[in-house]
Length: 146
Image (cartoon, rainbow, N blue to C red):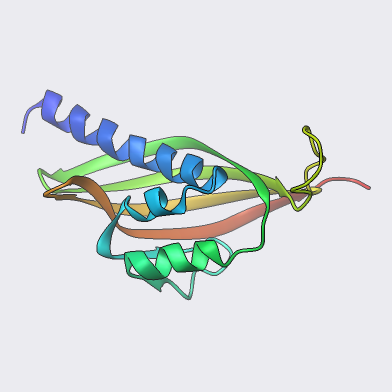
């Protein structure tokens, strides 16, 4: 594998990380589900010990969440190419949101900022690169002063 091939894989996987955040924020949950393999898994940062298994379970769980306005800011995305068909990634996520879904924009965000981390396994499929496993953790929470 040459440098161009590696950079192409890194770019494809980085794009998936960014799309995951945007699809979640814009409630495009079927698109979010399509980022995973059929049997992919997702362990949410707030519940890393209970991964959701399978694309359908991931989408269903996301659709059952209470309505919120959210923004997930993905940074420090580092992709390591393992082979032509597998890559691993680590990324950081700053997350904030609001339950004021009917207010006029801009609405006041909740007073907490969540600083999460994701560890991903990506695989090449017949329909492109997909997430095989995404494991979140939540090392920091910032509480705004009252």
